[in-house]
Image 1 (cartoon, rainbow, N blue to C red):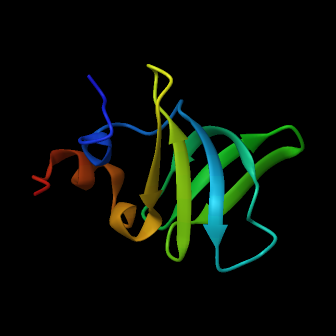
Image 2: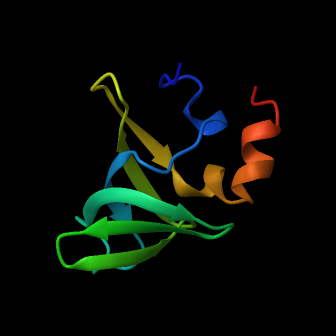
Length: 90
């Protein structure tokens, strides 16, 4: 089960997200559902369409299925999703 302690080892697609901080001020406040993930970006479906947000220099506030929220530094997500899920996080 996904929890704040192991969120980096789980699939992010389908989770609700808010961009809490970003180097680009235009990205701050973007919210919606994660629909795709690449090595360097998250694709978020918003009310206005899809937004591609770079992981580096961004802080993402994720809402987990049990309703808890967790802030994740995008730099810790910056790798291929399939590789991140299979690696051990200390």
